[in-house]
Length: 420
Image (tube, helix red, strand yellow):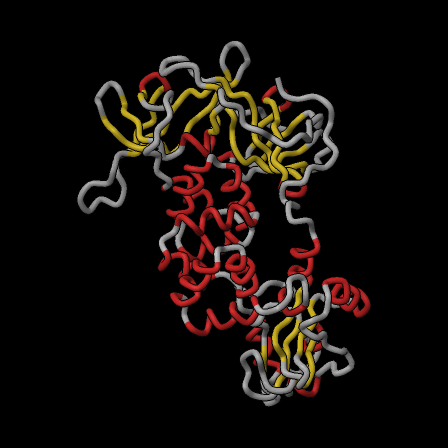
């Protein structure tokens, strides 16, 4: 194991795996916690915010960090699993320092913080020692000039800054999985969370919203102007959009649905008509649907689409026209595992599984769960009384509705004690 480098930049720490002494990964780095004393005194690094199982965020004191190697962090393994709660005297480096507007004292240059370095002091404590600042871009230059200066050469980090931007935090979030980005967004102070959400593009914001708790979803959507809120809802999967719209006041629901593209709005309206926690309310109305004349090569091309979840890509649904939900009569389903064993030029209709009974839209959540478990399926077609395909309930749809509403916030048993 190599020695810990003398200087470590915070932005490069985010996302790194954290290991215990046995080499087992116990979490990922999400932020640094520091206490700022003044403009001149280097802030002491108290510890890391780590994300562990269940997307829980805990505090890891720097005294428990034994080594920061290239691409990984090692700890003593003795971690307190109590949920991290930021104190009023603490500052998050990634969440609250990046994008702050500061002034470099010697020359009066103003810019924004894009990274902060920490290193070990003579006392063996970790402190913030350097600040990386980027000047605004000028003219046709793609980026402004950058400066890496000592902590005491920067003015503006020791006080709260209401004008904090979001550029560099957005860049970090865009490199993460939506669930990881949502976890960081959820833990930001309300004003900061709003600013960052407003700065995300529509598609990325939609992906992140789908991973946030309901109250966060509503809070963020309500600060968007109506036109943009409708655009973001269009980018969400129809079932997630329907759940979110249902949490809004009726007058707001109607405004947003009218602003959405008619086809997208129709899917959302249709899902909102079903009773909560039934197959109809949970289903996704856009599975992979093919006609009876489609070949296996056609099916494999469709399931390669990068936006499909694994459960939606696991099978295709062969229906008579029309091929958009609600379709013509459902003829059967074809498992991708079976299709991979067949010649690409043959028809999908020749490899159908016609033995499985579909579920009805009024089926309860327990009935859907029993159906998937009985047949070892990751998705089940939902049909109306005429056998037309209305949508598909996937195992991830089911879990989203079976888990407690606050499952992202629930605590496992915590160790005794707290950070000092």
